[in-house]
Length: 295
View 1: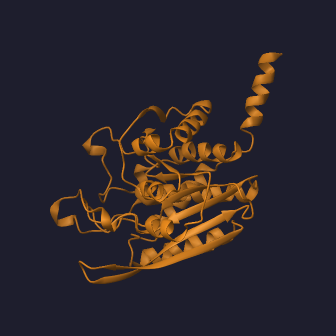
View 2: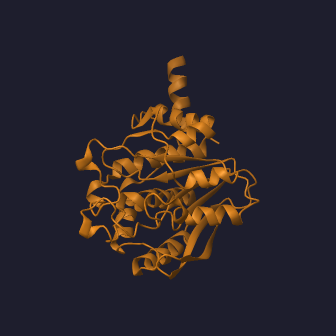
View 3: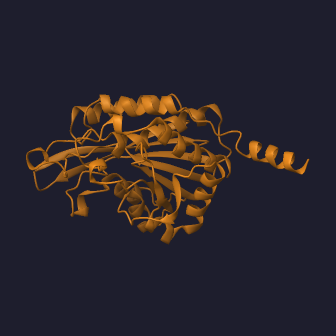
């Protein structure tokens, strides 16, 4: 009888978290269908229009946070836009989930004559966004007891390798503008669609917010998702570092490890949907939904 009680308790604890892996993967493919989504491109504008219209169907409110950026090196001017979608918008207790929706304007790890070609960004960009969009579907269906913000950062991947000043443009702007934003914590999703998914605990995240990292990995363990590995991985420069520096608590969930160099699709023209998996999106998405409903 006691064993049955604990089984029922476990099921009820995780009863609310649904996640449609096929729809999430369709969101990934939809983004890639717009073409490359680097600032200033046609695909960039098409993707922004899609995010805005789709989220307006699902969220309590959607806010576009546009800002101007001048690339002094090439003398070009861009308009960048963060998209902020809120659920249970009046709630004081809030958590957030974020991803970057832009793609890289150059393929750094291709052969020399292809390095200036923009990438499709199926994993590096579209995967995190796809999970957030499917989360929006589920939050519309089962409204959360707490406030939840989904933040889509622009301009994360614009900079040249080795020069961080032109990276993380959207999160920099957000942190500077939202000085009164005081969430309990946030979770950044980046490169989580890889078919060979392995997610160790990102170094800066664990150093800054070990209790949040342990909470998330504990939920993953309860759900049987061994892709969340109980070890410290790389220290990754990403949007979460900018947020932490501005006093906004945030951890990074990122797969930045590869079996070998032949499977290293990051910042190459091979970052395409066939290297991604609906199951990987579901693994991460289910854990994120459990984080929400466990609050």
